[in-house]
Structure formats: C-alpha cells, structure tokens
Length: 207
Image (cartoon, rainbow, N blue to C red; front, side, top):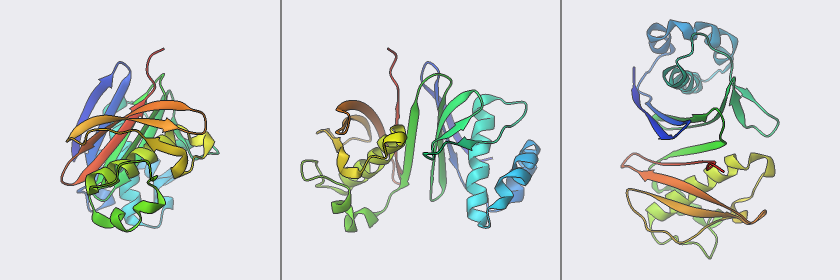
C-alpha cells in the first residue's frame, strides 16, 4: 500500500494523500479485494490503465478514511461535482499522487498539481494583472488555488479571472484569501508546497 497520510484538518474534515507507486491494477486488488466489485462496475470501463490506477487510489483512500464495510460508487452531479454516500468529497490527482478531502457536513474542495515549470508558459491565461506572479511558486499556488475554488463553487462555473488571490506570503505551507468576484464572497484556501507537488484545499467554516 502507498498510503501517505490521513489527517484531521478540523472537526468532521479529513484529508488523505496516496502516493501512486502501484504499476498494475492487480496491486490494488490484491491488497484490497473488496475493491473488486467497484472495479468491475466502474473502473474497468476506463481504457487507460493509468486512469484505472488513479481511480483505485481514490477508492483506496475512501477505504482508509471511512472504514467502510462495503463500497458505494462515487457519483457526480450535472456540474461534475463528486459525492459519496453520506459524505461531501473532493478529489484530485496528478502525476504520482492522489488526494481526497471529505466531510459529512461541510463543503470541501481540493487540488494537487505536480511541481513543474509548465505554468510559466501559460500563466497569463489564469493570473490577473492585480495578482502576484513573480516566482514559479506563486504561479503554482495561484493555479492550484483557483482549481480548488472553481471546484468549491462548481455550480457557478467560474472563469479564472473571476477568482482573485489577495496578497500573501509564500512559505512551505500557509493560507491565502481568495475572492469570488462573481458573488463577492471570500474563501480561505490553504496550501502546501513540496519538491514534488503543490496541494491546496478549503472547507466551509463553522457558522
């Protein structure tokens, strides 16, 4: 198994990370035979083995985080937002990693992006002129944070320029306030940077 961590972010909010070093579907099904029905019903329909492995990593995280005795299928609404029986969830995967955040009561959202200079070529497509973008780290945080905010407000189908990151200090881990310019709402997005990836997530605060 390649479970990296399951941690409690706040009451009723869990975050799980999986390092995808399994090279075969059989690696998952041998370690977790309870995944066989899910594989046959849903995952095997994907032609790409890489895609099947990403899906199996997410279901493996669900197993570790919910202690389910039986699995249900992850469903998606018309806006592409996933949900799982009894939980609000958000899913992300990138080269070599899968991430999942869940809560029974709170809205949640997550994104993970592998560390790469590719954003240098396209940052003008998603970073506003009034946002900081001097360093590669700032560009990566911006990209990932906006993906997280887009998922959180999935029904609004926000464009990148309808999302604005306020000034923040770049550290290995921290937070940034993000404006939804369409509704004038503010959202706190947390970030973590490693040599391999940037991870961003958010969850609804208690009222």
